[in-house]
Image (cartoon, rainbow, N blue to C red; front, top):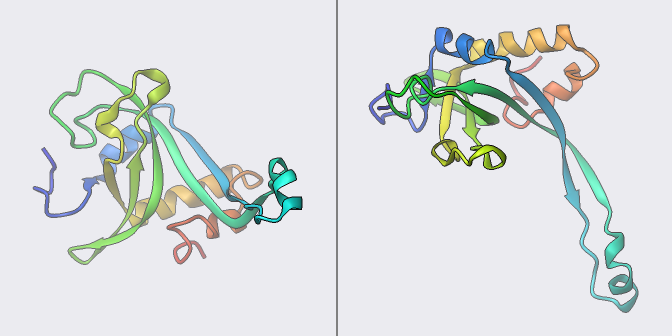
Length: 160
């Protein structure tokens, strides 16, 4: 049912559809990427293996969680049942000369799986996401600071 007849590697969400998605009590989240250091194999480090340290990379992940139907994201024609799905920003892609920000669905294992959304990709026009990010920075500059948003994986070269 993909609107773009499988030409793009993601379902293209138009502005009016994206407005419906984010206006359905969407929650926006950002968190810093973490790595856990691994101990070496010396006797002293093996004894301290439970003391692994979490380090932060300075890069951030961004997602929004929103109520969607299968129809609004191009999975099927079903527009009756709503699913609360997290969508993580995974990168930027160009399709037919237009730049899109791509989000990958997580499904929702805590509330019944929704496996049809797991790994399913949607693309939103880059300009729409730029406006959204500008709004988030202005609306909540402590949580969505410009510095953090510049370092969101997939937005690095977009936010000025």
